[in-house]
Image 1 (cartoon, chains in turn blue, orange):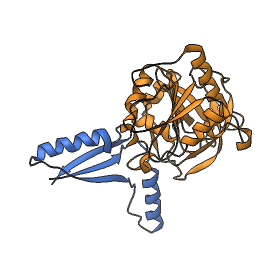
Image 2 (cartoon, chains in turn purple, yellow; image 1 turned 30 degrees about the horizontal axis):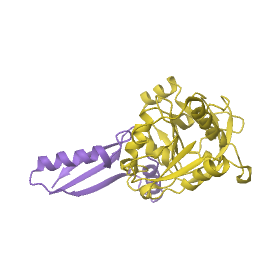
Image 3 (spheres, one colour; image 1 turned 30 degrees about the vertical axis):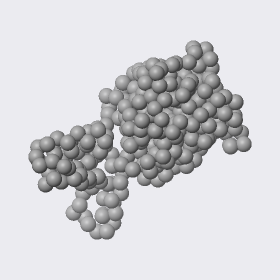
Image 4 (spheres, chains in turn purple, blue; image 1 turned 60 degrees about the vertical axis):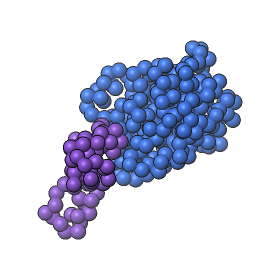
Length: 79
Length: 239
């Protein structure tokens, strides 16, 4: 089973990389794109037949390692 | 007096800390590989700068799970002096031994330069011989030193006088221009609630001899030597 974990900076945290990308898009002429937030994406191969169990496990490792709760939040998708 | 300097894969200021302790100050120093589980008689523990585990995932995020970190946490909980420099500070934050986290520098540049650092509090084992308000000129070398914590944590740090170092101009003024990375409240270093765990982004160990351009960093090491001499060593099962 595959778990996908998306980690992003919390809305209150300034993202200088996202800002730089947004500035680049502006200079490329994409005036219709406002804020850009950069994040991280993980694919975990989880040895489980239960989606709920895989989700719990992915959330556990996201809490412990993949995301830093001081600055980041995450969401999990199971496939 | 013995300094134990933890070496993670990717540490690169471990030898600078060793040199300062052993050759400049003339005390015992020993490298402790991160897979060890004991500190082997440490009086002072240093988590050095570098790029542990290549800074993969987040700075310090993987190093915090190294076996030695159990012994470091135990030593810290017992009141032993722990100094985290640069990547060492990042590891202490990831490990929860200090609050907050480091973001990418606000201008996205790696800063490698001497900066002004004002000593805000002298009731820590690493600043006890300094004068309050003393300005050090010591180097920084980091891409992710932009200290962040939520507003409540920052207010708590201010109220409990746990901000130990701030970036300042040469006259000791805390200004926006003197802030190299965007750290909240110009924070360059903080201490734990027990005040014995200190982390800072600047590198005092690289500024311990005039030939290196500055000997201002010496006061941190002289302070901890004086504190341990006065109050004795902390011993835990793994220290």
